[in-house]
Image 1: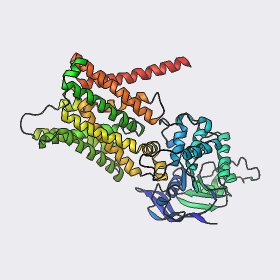
Image 2: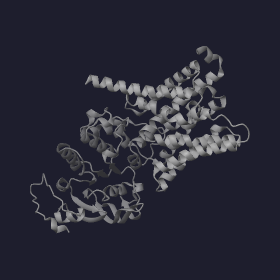
Image 3: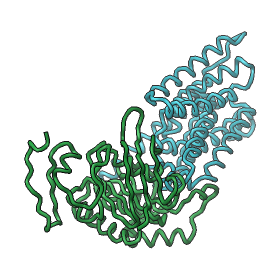
Length: 256
Length: 272
């Protein structure tokens, strides 16, 4: 298996605040990596490092064998939908079309027929084509998330990065998103930050537990000892949809 | 009014500068609302007053001084907000007041009878000169051409800066252009509504327009049309009643915003 993302002793500081410390990580092709960790653990920063949005303060990041600032168009990025301006005068299809832009689409750029058919194609697949003329803010959470995934997919990326794609979605929308990702994983590497600890382990192929430093990276077998270490407190695992796994009881005093 | 418009060149200048101001306002106003740069634009406008003072002091066209101050302060504020750990609003507030202070100082240093600064502070569309009009035409052309040339890139940048960077668009260039265009718009608007009143003319037309359309270029075009209505309406009232033009334009613009928003809410709620 080819290594598509490689981090070597990477640390990131925002001013005096340490976001990530000494992270080393290899992600292989067609992996489906779930990254979990508490708030402020640097999960989003890790995604932004791979997307080339944040520069490492020290250490080396290589994506597809290059520094991430030179991989434009091969990395599809799906940001947290809460950070976007929902009032923006954009129809859904216009927003998705922006995924067809490249670094060459600067001067007098016009979308082509190919761009439109690629966009409509993916919008059909993600079942948002009927919403294409709606203003972007008038979508439900799940629809908005699918629109953002569509926008990343029309780039035809090799790696798809998702920042909490299922946060505050209802159960139906969540499983819809996960089944879409599972399909996509046949063709591309997926790296996803999530809070859904229980669900995530039944969909992903590997798991990383992060809290500024990397606590675990490997097969998606969550133990509550590990989670206690990462979160600094006992965490109740709710493994719905995973009937074969029964989690042992934990006691508060295990984590002093 | 129409006869007067044909016979008096000062009214023709006023008419054309109203239209040009509305074009700059409609385009850049839409951008600053979506990018939440309203206070930033107010800060740039006030800093430009320093340039007006410097223009008088050096004996050059005050609007050229204003342009230099506006562009440099726009880039300076941006740079300081990026590179230092000072709170962005603090940098903005400092520039805002410093620009005004420098303007007053330069004017007090200028020998001779002090110039009338109220037309720069509150605008006087009826005193727009031929040379003001030429500066306005040049600034407007730069604004319109830049936006047309980079339209799709700007749209992407305005909606989601990070995604624009991920697809490979030069976000730093687009950001710098945005700040320069705001500075040029400020210069276009100084003669029409004045430094103190610019913010309202920048924000009222697009705030009305975005309630009726959800496409960026329609918002811009509708804002331009609304701007023209407000500016010509203000110009007419000011000419007929002999009241200050800048204030008349702003009162019409802001009143229209509240009336439209309230009516829209009322109509929507009575439908449901």
